[in-house]
Image (tube, rainbow, N blue to C red; front, side):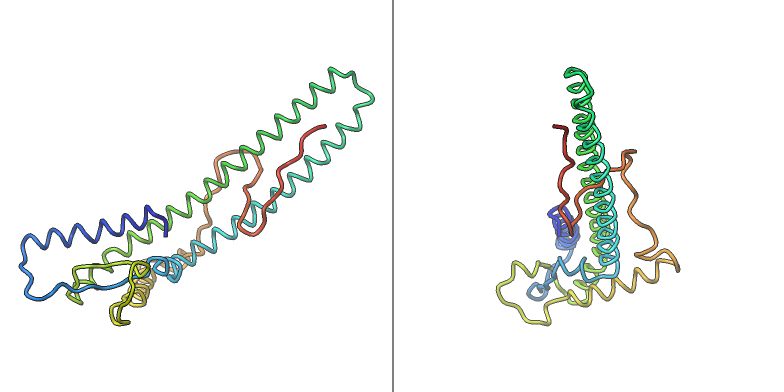
Length: 214
């Protein structure tokens, strides 16, 4: 889970507990429950939908990037072929213009990559926000006042882990709230606003940067 999401989850759960503590005197030792924050996203239907959309968009960007690279390579070869027919100054101007074009494409590529990753992070954050009331409810049912991440636990009983229960409740809540056709696969991530076509590197392939003129 992203640090921002983890911090939001911790804050949302600690503050209500602190508020209740001002008004209620505990009659028994405080209970502790455990959550696997990574699985809370990756194993839910919402989280899996986010990841599938992200992977699909990334593959599309990689394919688009390869097409653009092929076009740039062809343009570079054509420019090189004209070298013998151009004055040296003219060729240098054309080569510099081509290099500027390649650099612009590279910058647009990076912007699209950042936008795609940022959108995935925002969608994951929304899943965490939807899970907070569910986690608070489970804590209330188990008379627990502390929720900690499994990564920080040295030893615990299986009964203390509420991850499976939280995932099931979040999936059920999402299914009830979303009408048919509006589930995890309904809407792909919005494309970057940049009108240029270059994509960003996806998780499956690390595309080579476009070449520049000789």
